[in-house]
Length: 285
Image 1 (tube, one colour):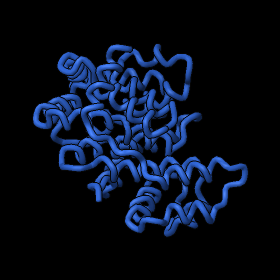
Image 2 (image 1 turned 45 degrees about the vertical axis):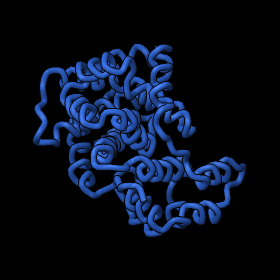
Image 3 (image 1 turned 90 degrees about the vertical axis):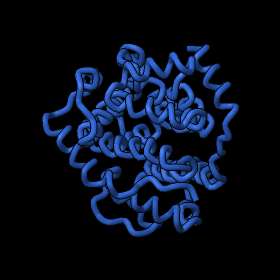
Image 4 (image 1 turned 135 degrees about the horizontal axis):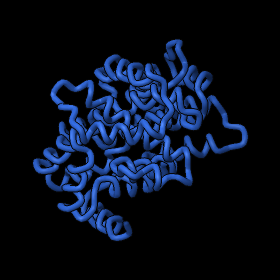
């Protein structure tokens, strides 16, 4: 693994990677205070009107448990948990930072749909919040966006193949680059100071043996399983994709970890169908 991470770092050093804007640092600083000031938090979220609109659009999907419509930053701060505020605002910022062209936007859109499914499934998982599940789904292929900058045409083929063949296509990626998007993605998540649970989920979401490798941390294990199962759900809603045996085995590895009722997958599929076409990923401004 050490060599794979070193190779990922070498590739990443050849690509321009943006820093998160200062507003995120200021928001984290306020949230980390003993008594965070809700007026300051709302003001920070409201600084950029377009980002605020996109943040509120995300907040008003299934990624929170709040059922009433949230119309402004003040209402969001008053009604949502502080962890949810941070996760969803950071997700909004990152969506705007990295989606530079059609391919990158399609990769991130897949992640956003997976996040919607994961958020719905997390209702039945005690140690994962809806916003955390969304962020894991959204961020899982962030490394793919940056690998695609090296060879856009070739990588587009690799990414499309991975949607139906998440194990064998991933192995082909490893052979070609001597690393993969999961290592690039985990380095990016660390650079942006995301939760360890997020960058470790990124690291394991193509590993069929993830349950063994994450045995020491139930939250990481559950987040990884949610992401894997959500990828299957997103593929199931895409009429252009064929649900083959490999994809079913990938799904089953996740289902064995999560104790979900029969209606959980149906609910997650409905969430993707309802919210997945709402344009939650926008090209950078």
